[in-house]
Image (cartoon, rainbow, N blue to C red; front, side, top):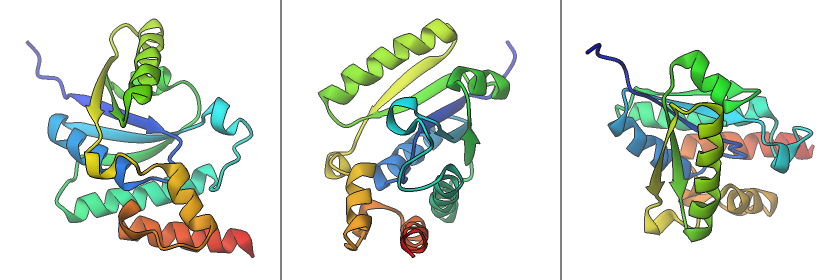
Length: 175
């Protein structure tokens, strides 16, 4: 049997990336040979590309988060921008696994439905669910956006490098 790389993707709007996303990347990096983290367009959340950050800014903040992983010695995680179907993105890169984080039962119900939809696009794509660590299960991009919006300290809700860039970019947007 041919030795094939196990390549996974983590998709999201990442508006912005959080410590929960980074924890998911860290854990996935231990299970797969490569992990591609893709900033995706989400028609229900930001059909016009709206959000706190542009797609290019989201990617830059995500890359800063990946840099924090590299500083820990994790070198098999990369950030990319994807416009289009995640199944097409996966097929183009030889990705066979989708990793999704689960914070609560409602997340599981939603993600389970998406996994079924992904199977309709590509029967070979497998979805792997990882439960969030209890201490960060309450952290979401919405929470981080609220912190930014009201000028609160980001604390450990984001990696420091990513948080610094998010604060800078948000400040520039407000001028």
